[in-house]
Image (cartoon, rainbow, N blue to C red; front, top):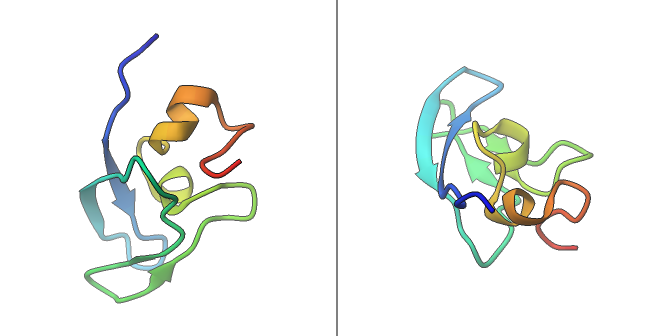
Length: 73
């Protein structure tokens, strides 16, 4: 089994601002406010959290179990 990556680089789809964040391991992150344009990011319809939608690395539960199970399922 591969090690779980806890850092993901989020890219705002509105303004292109990029920031690396540490992902939570115990909860879904459904909202994220861009520091530059203040847009509130929400997951795309088929994703479980903002990291799976806009991050360079999917959230820890998806890394561990696969996209089918998501963060919360």
